[in-house]
Length: 473
Image (cartoon, rainbow, N blue to C red; front, side):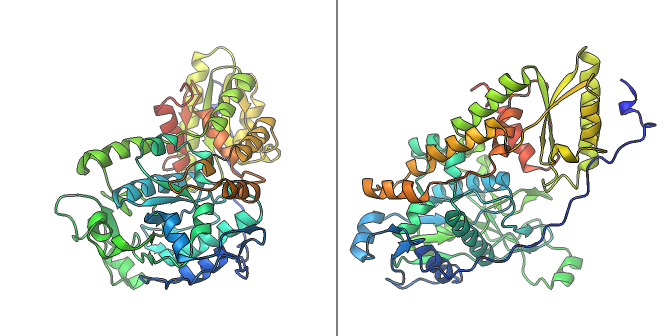
């Protein structure tokens, strides 16, 4: 290998400094629409029931007319179902992880899962569970619903089910689902209970021996307790005993969580500790099903099309995304691992090594960076990447907007008139994050391997796709 990998060679700055982003002003909740009333009235309430007929259905952003609010219509429409809401946050991969946890929670509690929208990247940030610095459940719920309103108003509302294929879950009756847009149109004086527990106080379990009510192994240390004035402890709590059959929450029509994100940490889990080893056969089967939820066919077809039609050769995929939360923490090790992989491939391949780069850094800013050096070394490396304006991305955006997968699933029957109104007024005019989705699909087809950022949920998602051979399925 030439001096490119030599320690004696002056190395360029591997990545430009990340610019600080200014906080956007909060969205005003002055609309008279049902959603605005819902957000103002519901998500500031903790452990309380909303009196009947507190909501009135008027108009949806001033355009969509829904039936008048009458208790007999509501009872007949809801068919006695009970629902589970939650508040996703952070980037898409985190939101997908939360969705999988929500599927488990809904199935265990025998509730219909309200499928949320895909939020803009880090439009809502939870904070840090290990540092006990997170938004309260009520705060994250309000932030999420505020952003959901903005997505609807701007024509950018995309359901998680528009992007991820959940047909196998629904067809097998593993879980009941309803699109949030349709669900919101039904709300009319429904009793609701919101949870005030979060990762600072609770680790949800299910049939985990005699651990219910016990202290979790991870607690705030004395220094953190003093600094944050923490007087509470983290306890392990069985979600079924607390919120399922026989509990006070069982009869409540809508059960609203805050975040459902979790991750392993210091021998425990940050918030949800439900694994196959401690669950019954039905939950074990569901855990296996949600382990990998593929992208919808439009996204996977686009990724395969780019791999075969644009790259046209075996290639390596490298994840170098500046806005990835873990990239800053593992930048050096990521570049070291990529260097080693490229050096090894260069020794084995006589021609240039094709590399597909998942990056959010515009090519115009590559000068003096690691990517700039790679692109100039054209005799040994051939770089490929995607941009938002590329035909494959634009085409996939249009296909997803017209497909409307999320509006095809629902455990509550919709009238033909309601379906037409929903498709006319609530279908997205623009689908965000498509570049990232297609990039992940491309990386699932990388026959020379994948180099990701340690701890990144994006890297985990790509690894999962590669594990389940998503490219060849």
